[in-house]
Image 1 (cartoon, rainbow, N blue to C red):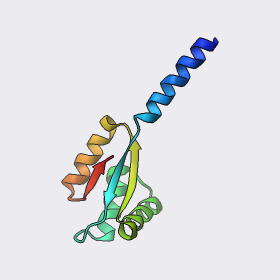
Image 2: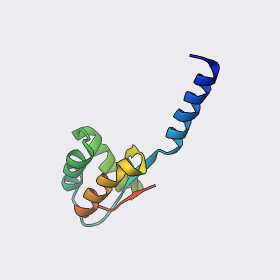
Image 3: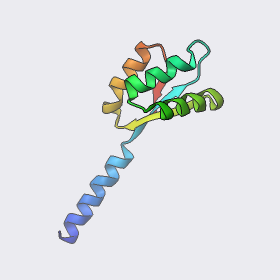
Length: 91
């Protein structure tokens, strides 16, 4: 690989990293821990421990990033979490 190709590849990787966003889960007063955990497992494909940790962080800190990707890839997760009445934001 030439120096020019390496530089081009490095720039492409850097652009992809800059495009990464997070799906943020916010604490609310109407969903149970079990429901939030089940939703994180079903929608975000978290394992049970990861889902429980995210639910606890959101509860105690008010919010927790639960998924990272590009805007386009996060939209289906955002829509499904919203449909399940969880408060989320892509940021």
